Image 1 (cartoon, rainbow, N blue to C red):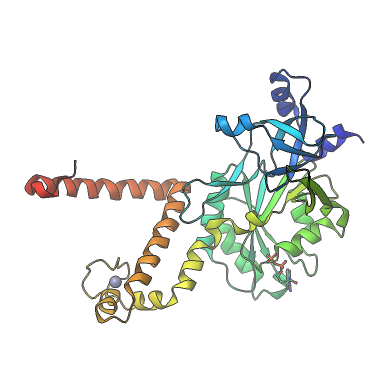
Image 2 (image 1 turned 135 degrees about the horizontal axis):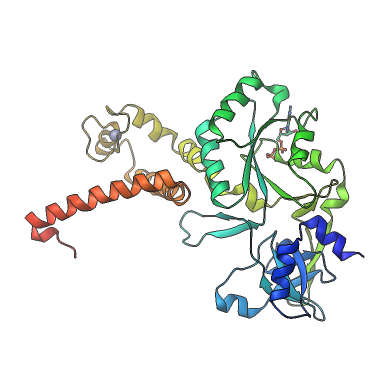
Length: 357
Ligand code: GDP
Ligand code: ZN
């Protein structure tokens, strides 16, 4: 097995080679994480096929390996030991509602395709948020309008997407007819790593299959061990494409928070959205504004207070995610808080009971 050629296909380069050499331990091998399963890592690009992170990694609180990472692994009888996670060029993270720490979803992705379906007019605000998240993670975004075979006006939709994409490429595709798939491949040169993101049903699996070109081998199963000597077989999540590029396709990737959050909240709370539409002010916060339909419904008991509280909590978390990634939105939030603090200080001066400092 020629591991050097395999590593080249997986994206190994001079920078990474230099970093490995700086570690100064000739026993360490370079490998790329192709799947994580219950704390065990499936690797490619070296003779070590499965490994577990060294305990030191957790104690030192540094980078914890994720799919797509390049690692320096120490061969051992049985599982190898991941001694270092090499510097990442990008990292996509997921923020779960209610969980403080972001969870690494995938590392070292060069380009992320934000897939949207041409069955409906594109949601440009949602595409903007997704592109911002991709950029914040250090990857390059591209917009994919899939199912153009079903589109009413694919060219018009692509023009609209281009106006919202900040210069990211916008490509129309059909996984059904194969249209545009070549243009996707062109954005994945040998050694590059891509990933697909987007709402369920947009056609991501179908596009992965189209890119694989029926090469089922690339999706091959890997065996990992559970640390107690038991082995299980699991699906590889970093796939090699026929042209020499890679595709990361993990369940976590598909679920990446932001894309669905706003939409999901609005769908889940359709009753509240309907009520809010009846408020006198379009940007009503439902906290004491005159003519607030939500407050009226809370008063009459037509709206459950707990349900309203849960809606507000989710909205705050959604807004929190946006603040994490969008500098403009972050600046706006800082301004708002400045005003709140100023008001609070002014009030504290007149009423000592309100002081909390
Ligand atoms: P995912 O949830 O994003 O992975 O979406 P899937 O790949 O599972 O596709 C959802 C459905 O849309 C399936 O029934 C596919 O056959 C269909 N589909 C996917 N891409 C296309 C396309 O380009 N054109 C048409 N007509 N159907 C498509
Ligand atoms: Zn209101």
